[in-house]
Length: 96
Image (cartoon, rainbow, N blue to C red; front, side, top):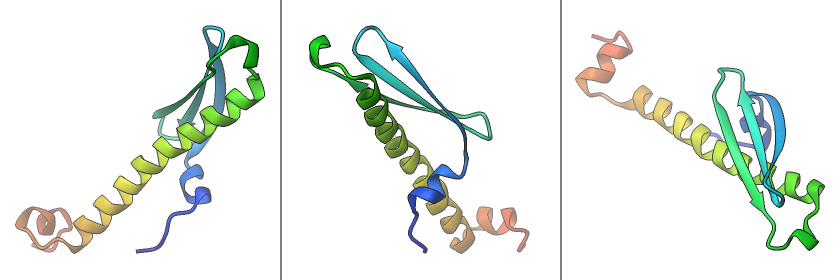
């Protein structure tokens, strides 16, 4: 199985939006081409330290980590189904 890269996981992202939640929490919403949304968050301990651009960077990293988990699951599930020899998988693949 080939390693996934950041480019691999980001190819399904249609758009990236950011939203401020409250006064010191930033959300990053990755909208995929299929319509699914992945949300990453970052929060600052003190309003005095809040920096919107840093909040967006950290929220994007969090969203990418979550997306990475979904994509990894999808890739592993497809690989499993392609190798599995149980009757259900063989029927799905049209082999019986």
